Length: 238
Image 1 (spheres, rainbow, N blue to C red):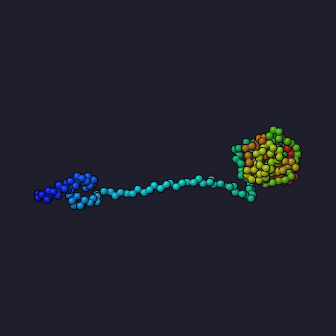
Image 2 (image 1 turned 135 degrees about the vertical axis):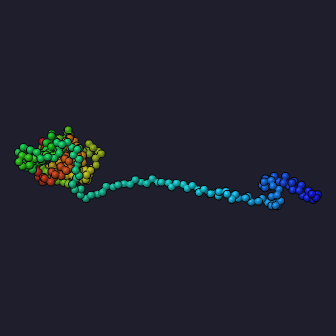
């Protein structure tokens, strides 16, 4: 080796030793240094390497807002017609409507209310009567006497009297007729009093002392009675 090549070789080794970062970048290879002129070669791509996939950014879940509850409003019906039949299992057999023997001096068509036995009788000819189960006034609200049917009403409205409002401030001042009205499907108004023979939305109370003096019947029974009597009918309450 000539002195000139030896000097060049020694100078190259010294340069590599003085640039550790560059030497590391080339893997310490002198041939790479000479061939590239000191420029860092681009990294070789592994042809079998799996391509890097960019993970999609996670999207925030949609926020579900609390919607106001659906309000189901009752349908307004112009006429309720005939009330649905109450279940008979809620009423004792003795209070179900029946035609029975009934001896009386009253004329056919007269209504006789037996508050003690919780029965109403519509007198028929030939010693017979149609008997209905009823609910009557609770203790302190029973009464007796003779009245006349002065008015008939289908699906009557109800206005509690002042004395009832005083006892029950929670009652409405007026309630329109309908299935939820305590007067039920029909009402027979007795004289000028506040008493009525009427239906009920609580058929299970038939046979009990529950009212404020009115005579209550199952809706199908008061409808039957309503169709059989007229204004002016005599009513005897025992």
